[in-house]
Length: 596
Image (cartoon, rainbow, N blue to C red; front, side, top):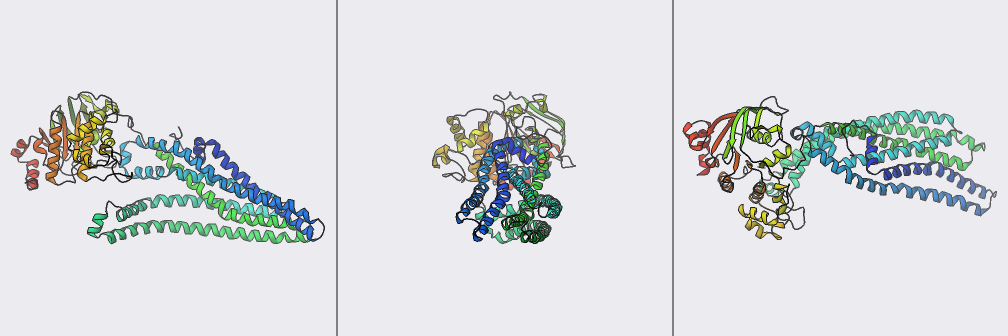
């Protein structure tokens, strides 16, 4: 596997692409080596040969045709070096392809298996987004940086080799300046990555505001309410905060690097001046003087920019690898990627016995001593104020969280003792924020039971039950029409139509327990009541759980469970609870006018 749970180091930014495409990585780094030789030693020597030959011709010490060979060699060195300099782009494309083929699925596989607590935790979600958002770009930048570092090292070694016989002290001075430059670049790389981490939250916010300001989904409200200027101010506030953090880091790096570059330029001028005397005394040919001086000034650019840029990116990749280590250490949920069982077990009963649960980032218990029992074939309504813990019960039932106290018994057996695939096969949930998949309507419905192949006839039968016939008839390609706008010919649907598709997914599932977790919260109370009524009729004889803080559907339930302070405050039928005159009766009376 290309990614493993271990401690990653900076060099792993090279090892990972090497595992994906070893041949192309080796070739790309080899090209960097050859390119460095061509643009230092070969170019300097061919320049010296050409200039010295030209001087000899002007001094009538050589025939005019003697210039052709050194001129051809000089052109070949320049041309070949230019060609080789562009070759890495081709190999980068092949490396990128290999990484997309191997690394992207690996990240998706790892993310799919994370414990749900990491998804809801802001800090771990920041880490996940930071590592998995653009992994290929981060790693490819590191490969380029290592290639540039090889070019720099080879070029510096070659140039120092050329001048050591003429100005030996310059070698010591240049080497002495190179070490601090590398240190500055490493510092700059770390600071730059830290700035990216710090500004991530601000960037995410201003990206959200950009979406609000520009997306087609918000255009109606944006036009109607005229909130563009207000949101734009918020966008600018977040953008400016991020910009200031990045700006001051960039200023510090620029000052440090340019100061070093100026010092290197001064040393290069000093080296050139020192070489004038050997030329005058014929100890150094004019051609060699020009070749060496050109190489030395090339070294200024190499040390003052290329090497520092490469070292900075390598330092950033090292910080990225630290994040990758933390990413790989996030706990995985056993069975998270398993499909539901082909045949779910028969359902008899479900019981919460003194269940206590608090979220990992909270000190307070959301559920505190919850006890209830559900039986086969009955309709239940779980009601309570927002934040009472209604949805939390769904998260525990479906295995998103299993770190609870007490017992949850499914058919008399502790829920945590079942395989994840079995738990998945037992429950079908229509969530409040149900997904709107931009694939065909048939595919949208069929993924409600991904463990089996579902015929189009079965899909159409379910769609008919949920009264989607008219919608299907209006679509260009019927039930096979792609939904949304990312695919050409895709169709937009209303919120109510999307909601019916989400319910159809639940209907087609063979799960014996159906849960509606406030999927109708965006509807008006009367429309919500109608949807619950239709669902109850379709589910007659099966076990259903309606979760809502609005009570229009509760009359349909065999038993109503009122949650307050993490436990069951009241339970019974609608008539029983109204006679009791407690929490439920008070809530119902407060909402009565919604349904009249």
